[in-house]
Image (cartoon, rainbow, N blue to C red):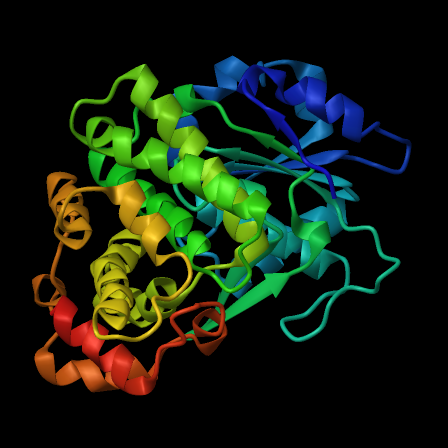
Length: 367
């Protein structure tokens, strides 16, 4: 589905007017799912004019039930969609809010964790309004769903938001730590898209531009934010989503999920802990007389310098992120077990084609 990109949150209701018209059977033509902290910090009630009686009459406003995209949260919001007979859901927040909205649209249309909605079923349209610059979920056709300790991925072209409203002014009050972990996630997504088995000319264009923006502006956005840096990171995050919408992510993401789950490491930091060593292993393949995996040279060139691995780690440190697994409480004895809990679907996307021994080596070098 073709997506429309809009650059001002002030255009939200103009967008909604194109997507939804109230009818006699609809008590609410759209649902707003919001991250309440981001909503209040940005003053969105005033910006969007939600004091307007007609607008309140036509909207159901729901706060994100959990800080991660859990199945029970998606079920709650799906029920709201059903009860209100809404055909549009607006997600305002970070990747969690957007993924919950996607999951709610999926479940409300008959989908489950193991089955898709019927092909002929039209899912509620999604309007994504990110308030962080990271996951790029506003540009992708998939969502993460946690059911207890199990991570599931929902994927369908109907889950790609019809509109992405990417307005950097919504990040004005984003804490530095969130800017850092979100921005590193976006950067890693861009880099991983370049060495994915599924890379295309289009995805390389998105990944290259996004990586250039993040490498140039992330440190400033974290340590001394300016409107220019915020806008650049918003663009980088969106482009990272466009890139992995085609390629999906690879080894660094595959290793990150267990690190986040077991050690409560924010997702972007967890990915950045092993991404430089994934690059180092790729470089060593060529140095040792093997074939350098596709995409390696492009990533090295983008990062630049005599030692791109060290330069990447220096950027993480400058943003206040951990650079070693030991820094987040991982024990050396834990590494072999972590290597077995990798997401194999993400591994298959990587031109590195890492073995079990490779995964242990990446973790040991990251320790």
